[in-house]
Image (cartoon, rainbow, N blue to C red; front, side, top):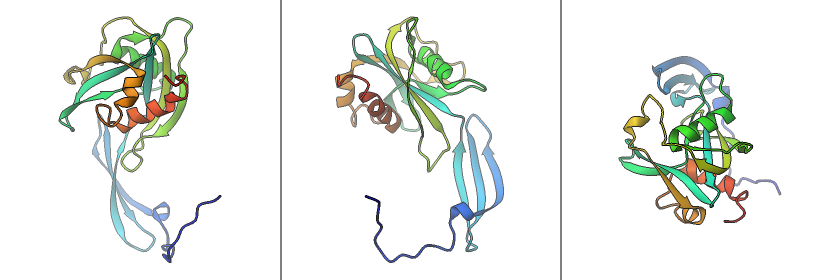
Length: 199
């Protein structure tokens, strides 16, 4: 069954896909590129469109041999609170998503995949498409083992008051909407759920 739309609203005389780009301004070049684009709509109306231009990223769902989920607790300045998130980060130049996922797993948690175990790709999706063009690759890492204290990156993570938490998968799913409230982490858990044998 196809989708149907009700109402008498007529199609506008063109849309954003037909807009003319008048000007692009880079408000902030790095670490995240903030962009303003001046657009002229087909009907002559002019708007400014703002978005964050970022490299592709990865997010890892690490599960131990005992069925525990490995999460990162960190302070998010814009939220003024701690969050529980899955290890994640952006791809370096010319880095493959799998390499980035393994690197981020080690940097943020200190856990690794044992020899002979590979990441399981779960798909790639846009994150917050109204605000950014970020494209995230999701991977299930199972089983992971603890190897060493997390090193973090050398840029900013040392200020995040980061710590690593292991909780049973069942508790993690129950925590959605309370202590786990970031949509990227929640979406990743939903993607992984069908691969986790209903634990």
